[in-house]
Image 1 (tube, helix red, strand yellow):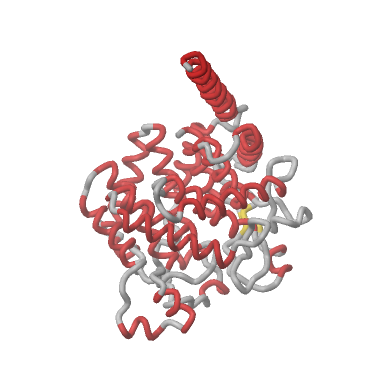
Image 2: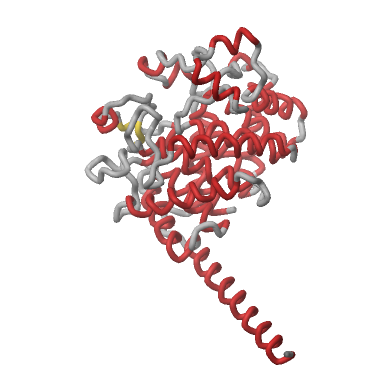
Amino acid sequence: MRIIHFTMLIFSAIVVMTSCSDNKKGLDIFTNFPQGADPKVVGEVIANRFLMRPHSNTGSWYNEEQQKDTTLFNNPVGYIVYPDVCAWYGALLYASETKNRDLLRQLTERAAKVVYGDEMNLIPVANHVDNNVFGVIPLEIYLHNKDKRFLDLGLYMADEQFKRLSFEEYAKLDETHQQWVDQGLSWNTRMWIDDMYMITVLQAQAYKVTGDKKYIERAGREMVVYLDMLQKDNGLFHHADDVPVYWGRGNGWMAAGMAELLTYLPEDNPNRARIMEGYLKMMQTLLKYQDKKGMWHQILDDQDAWAETSGTGMFTFAFIKGVKKGWLDAKIYGEPARRAWITLCSFINTNGDVTDICIGTNKKNDYQYYLDREKVVGDLHGQAPILWCASAILE
């Protein structure tokens, strides 16, 4: 019996050592990048580029078509909105990972003007999924400076996303939205896949800061409903429940949102297994649709559609996170993640602007509409995922 027991111990040790060796080998793929793809250098370029530009808001980047979107309550013009937030958040993560105190100081000073300074008028009204996500910025900064003004604003945005509506507010919702609220979902719910970054990243951030499980439980519950309603058999997502198009960046929001949520969702959370299932199913199909250069396309299942950088950046982030967290097999996903990152970096011009980014896009049940979307340069939809990827590699 002792011999058998000793043999089993040796066998177990070999398995653990082999597993650790394979994992280390897989993670080595995120080192020794070629010139132009060093995540520390690239991250600094993109973060500094963000600091150079004015705030993006509904008045500066939304096109006329998007201004007509009256989902839930009207989205007011002239407030900081999610592209700015997502790049800002990425820059903060990068500053934290690299311990770049000067960059963190500049990003914090920029936020202070909005939180309690002379730019308070730019704080979004907390009445729309694209507005509430602003809360991740003061919450992330609070982790560094412990200034309660940042904490209070961030938690206000997170709590407003799931607030109990007044009778008048509830009555303004259509029957479908009322049913979602009745299920305990956010009143920001609209079944656009974009939401599963905007809602989950804010609630996960509130959980990270406070340790209060109500935030992460909200996010998990919301994600499961979106998965059940919108994920298709192939693991991908239509842009919305009434738009049967596998739009690249739309799917990117979902991939990045699941990766963010799984990072903070406790192992014993009852929704974790379902979310992991949805994440793995999506990653498997994304592997199939990645092109030889490492890119994904404007419409994922159409290789004749143009290669698009913002969606590619989001998928790359989800791959990197998955490999480094052990959710994805490094031997299968490591090289595609590395290839995608290196190729993405080749789309950054000498000004620090990412090219070939799909312009801000409303939903439309028209395949050609997505193919014909304008390619833009330097749009924060594309700048942000570069910062997420750089931070994830350096993590």
